[in-house]
Amino acid sequence: MRIDITEIAGMNGAYISVEKDIPSSELISGKSDVTLGESIHIDLKIEYIEGMIIVSGVVSGTYHAVCGRCLADIDEKFNIELHENFMHASDTNNDSDDYNYEGWHIDLASPLIDNILLDLPSVMLCREDCRGLCISCGKNLNDGDCSCDLSDHGINLQMEKLKDFFD
Image 1 (spheres, one colour):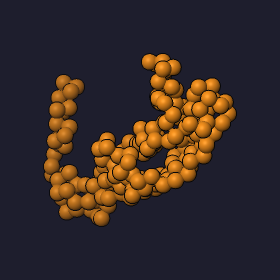
Image 2 (tube, one colour):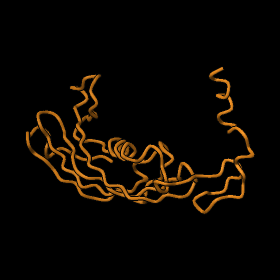
Image 3 (tube, one colour):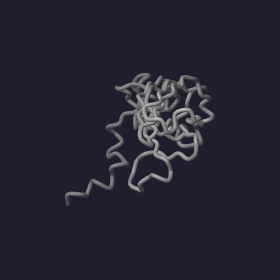
C-alpha cells in the first residue's frame, strides 16, 4: 500500500492524514496462520521531520485463527497503536530498525502487517481457561469430561524420556 508523500517531503513539520479501509489481500502474503478480516481500517498521521517520515495512528480490524489447545475457531478484533519511522534509503544505517523509502512514496504494507502480527497473542486461545483436547481420545474438554481413565495410561508418552533423568 503506497502513500504519496510529495506534498510533505522536504517541509519540516508538514503532515498528511490518511484514513481509509484497506483490503487485507493487499497486506497478507502467507506470513501467518492468522487470517485477517476483509479489510483493515487505518487512521494515520504521516509527518516529515528532518528527512524522516514518522507514521503514527491506529490500525484496527478483525482476525480469524485456531485455538492452540482445542482447535476451536477464534474470531477477534484488534486495535493497534502504530508508531513507525521511515528513513530515506540513501540515509539509512544498517543497524537501524526504521523502514526505508525511496522517491516520493512510502510503502505501508510491511509496517502494517508487522505490527498486526506482533500485537496478536503468541498462543491463540479460544478462552483463557481453555482445557484443550484429551490426550487419549481427543475429545474437547471444554465441552465436558471424557470417559477416558487417564490414571490407567501410566506415564504420559510425551514425558517418557524424562523418567530416568535423575537416575
